[in-house]
Image 1 (cartoon, chains in turn cyan, yellow):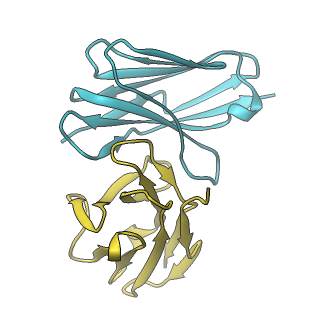
Image 2 (image 1 turned 90 degrees about the horizontal axis):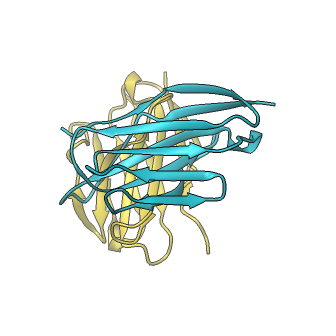
Image 3 (image 1 turned 180 degrees about the vertical axis):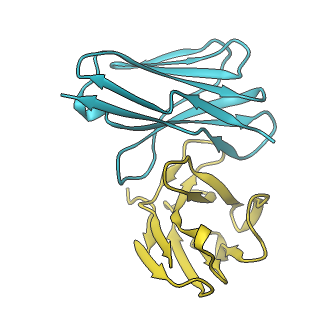
Length: 111
Length: 112
């Protein structure tokens, strides 16, 4: 079955440092979505990537979709304490209706 | 726009008891999802509805879990009988077809 793995599982950074999480799928994806879940909260949609090699930016966040559409990354520049939370990628296999969520990367920002 | 509503927010039961969760999706969203999120893991899809039909229930433990979506709007998820390993947060989400999902606050279930 489809598997979506994320690394690292945990990341501690000093405020102002950069952060990157990587997402890898065992199968080719039609699209990938990224969600953020604050401690004690529920996942909140950040962005969707559809095209091979696509890059999208949201302020300090940069999202990339790999050329083979099997991997993706989220990069945060100059982290802030408000960035704390767990970041999940969620991929949809080509032809499928459902999303498979990754294992998540838990980000801690030290002020 | 009102978000996805879920109730109850918390539930504590003993093993072998039954429990039911309720979800009211965002108005107009045709697709409704139930996820199980065990502490420290990503959400795992249990069942996906398109209107009132089931699209995917391949990961639903059908010997103990059941779900329905009457009239294509509200949905209930039931566990009967509950096991210790069912302790988790149960998240409901809704979306337009294959678009971003909007999650409710979840129901935290503890099985003793």
